[in-house]
Every structure is written in C-alpha cells, then in structure tokens.
Image (cartoon, rainbow, N blue to C red; front, top):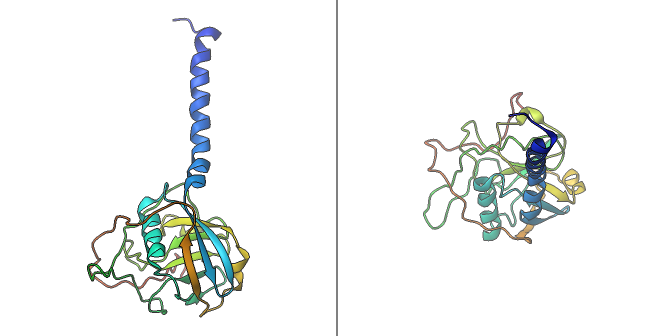
Length: 207
C-alpha cells in the first residue's frame, strides 16, 4: 500500500494523543493523591503521598497516619542530608506492631522507577539491610541523594513547608499528622522477616 498524507494523518493523531496522555499521567496521578499535613515542634509541612505510584507503601503510611501512630513520635536522626522519624522506640530500632494481631508489620520493597532521590523534600521509607523490612520509620531528604535510587521506597514529597525540615533537630517531634485530601489505609503487608530489622537507611557509602 502506498502511504499518503491522508493515510498517515489518523496514525499521527493517535500517536500524538497517546504521547500526551503518557506524559501528562504522572501529573494527574499526583494531583489526585492524598496530602498529609504534619505538624512538628519546628513547624508544619504538607506531604503528597503517591498512592497511585506506590500503593502498598503509600497506604501503609496513610494507615499509620489515620491511626494517629505518628503523633508524638520523635525525629531521632538528623543528618546533613536527611531527617528521620516515626520510630516508636525513638532510637532507630522500632517498628509498628499491629494491635489487632500482635505482629510486627513489614512491607515489601516497592520501587517505582519514575521516582528518584533527586531533590530536597523527597520522602521514603527507612529499612534495615533486609529490603523487605520497612515498617513505620521514614526519612525526608534535605538534598539530592540519587545514589539511593532503587534501594529505598519513595512514597511522597513535601509540597509545602519545606523550610521546616531544615529546622528539625534530634528530639524534635511530630505533634500531629492527618490526611486532609482523600486517601485511605489498610495497605497490603508482607509476613515478618525472620530477623528483627534495624530501620536505618545507610546508603551505599555508609551515610
């Protein structure tokens, strides 16, 4: 068949439409994702939670927020590159124990290749050397750390109040966290790893 401009136009229009849809999808997905307002002793921040991109990890976090689990928890770790909190023990060793089952909840490592440790405000789950040991502890970047890509599950980003993270010092606390824009809990969780994890991200260079 001889291809003419008349024959090519429909195909070009379809290809263009698909390209636009793919390029615009991440933006639409993020706009529909829930937002968590986190009040701390140093100020308030808003975190958009990427439930459409990393549903298991995001819903685990949203479930803990909805339970009030993070209220009163400290930021036990403050580095030049991140702050870390959400540990019930306050020392980097704690995990969430589901009161309904008495079992520690761990979630499998969930990586979305569209998400990167590329800017301050990226929010991800802390874990031990076991990739499936994330539970409740999370960290927020102060600067890009792309060497962590593919190793830790990014599930959100600070969309307001980014300056708050730079004022956090060890021992500062989460006063209250709540979902203010959609979302829900009850994410899928895995069975417990055989060993109790230490939920501190070290990174490939021992940060």
